[in-house]
Image (cartoon, rainbow, N blue to C red):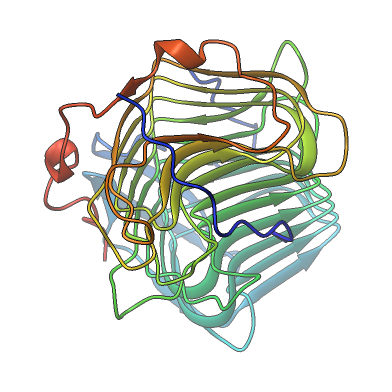
Length: 345
């Protein structure tokens, strides 16, 4: 849960390969690659054998199911389910391990699309998640991979509203990569698009947030794009992401140790809620060190204060490593993302 609040910043103008965990399952499933067509066999959540064809990351085979809740299960594939969540998470996993959720359509819940609690080795790939409070919420878990999904219109309200939120996720092989994420104004009520709360990778294998496309945020005055180090944490890296009009801020480190924001592109037009492109401000109340923010391209217009506002260092925050290698006022605009980024329905 995002507890750190971030408002009223002073205006300051500034002139990988990802390891994809493929667990062994009792049944094979459709290919995870979101770009290539394939066929495969697997088990849906009702235990039925199914087969299907995927093209361009979209499966045409869905069974209609009630919300799924599993406790203490392992070595399973949940594939091809179409779930309207209603008041429940579409999928809940508690104390589960070695689970793959793939090619599912998870929609219309006042709760989460997927809720994980005390789980390990869970791969969530190639799903469509829309009109839920939070897309994927992982609590006290490890080895969680969220890859090649498409998500649309998170409903919140705060403290929910993320596409992906890790809360006390730890260990190796944690990633949020190559997802396409979009909130449409008037159809959504998001907070942070991707949020890392009290989560810890390891030095040789940090939590990796890589290659995501994010468009749309607001009207929250506290939510934005990618948040690292919320209330602490360590070894989190956000690279090669593209953000357009992501909300109040683009990307941020609000605490923690050994965090990096590198090689991202962030653009925002002036919005009533837009503030700053990238900031580092330790608000955790805990020591914070080893912060690296480098080689990012930013063109962010603040509607709250007026004018370009690309970077901000909070009071008492040490200058991050590589701070002078960032590009403020970069020659980028909304076309850094294609007009259509959500193709699954």
